[in-house]
Image (cartoon, rainbow, N blue to C red; front, top):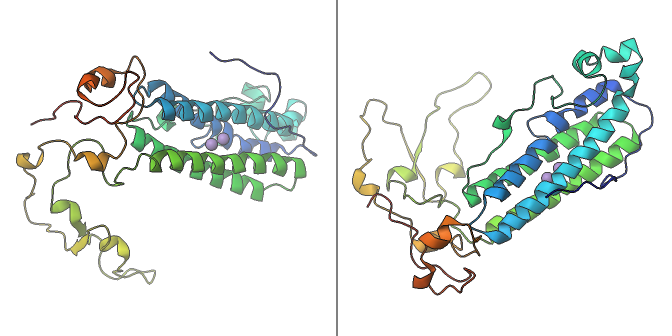
Length: 296
Ligand code: MN
Ligand code: MN
């Protein structure tokens, strides 16, 4: 359940309203990297996360804080947009907000694009979702930084600095949640990638460009087992084999992904056959067997 407390998480005070800046702030209200995206993405990931109650709690903690951020951004925007209600020139800064919306906040970005659920990155694979969340926090941080660059108002900068800082806090928490899964970072999901092909870096952009760009070399071609190959543009696709699609990644590659305490409604709890593992009644402990065999 949710409960609203009539208090902002961070007190907002501004000097002179700046309607154009208020319009830019909408980017963090109804925009692609905004606070509603963060709130919905983490909260819904959390609701879906039945396989790891610890990280579910993390997702719900941060998702809830993001909703409080949305409230702060909304308050800040309304203060900046206030002149729109009475002043023609101010109203022209954003007719969608001033005429259609009466000068209040609504779920649009700074260009008037409506908010959409397609902004949300929710895969239901916990480590994949945590990576999306780390990237989302990084994007939100950059947007706040750019907003701070475009205002001189001390009270506004103060609130934005708080919000920007919290995104780094969240980034730390999501990073710790991912790292503590102790997964091989290139182990995603259950199926093994095809050997050979997985280590080929295709040199797909060659020649000399008009901006002093040329065929460059870097560690991205030779690290993590990679080596450089010229793409075989006339060769039929070789190497993929049904024999290679033969099952689950080795247990150690999945790190502690299967170890966490499960929700009582988790399908994994039954499928993993706790009675065959050394797990206790609450589902804690190390699961030795895969949930099911894939395409074996
Ligand atoms: Mn936030
Ligand atoms: Mn955040």
